[in-house]
Image (cartoon, rainbow, N blue to C red; front, side, top):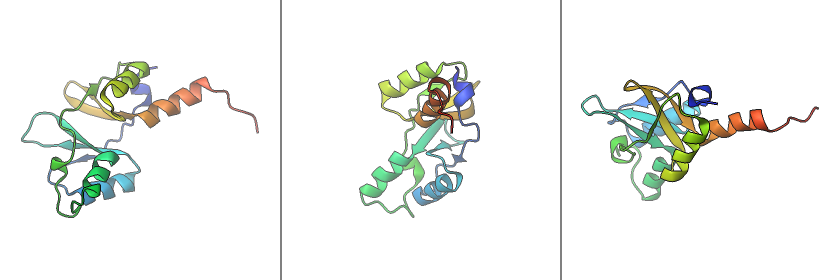
Length: 131
């Protein structure tokens, strides 16, 4: 199975000037664990995850004033839609990530998370007991 079959296609995209609280609120509203941060003045994308938010707040930073751009990963490992789920899982393990941005032709198509991969593997590999 490929990344395209399991990725979340409705991606939360925010700007680098959003505060940590703004990003956290949008993530909670959309029930997602990450937001892609796009800076039109810079090439590429960053990603802010639940973990980034927890680390910032845990260090005592003010989520109402701290900019997302200061507390995210700019060196993103990208997946392509053609990768297998095994490829994506291996990249996550190697890099210590739980989310990968999926791109094609420089455009963000989605995000694949550990949860997405486990959902698909569970549905396709584990028998479901009858009620």
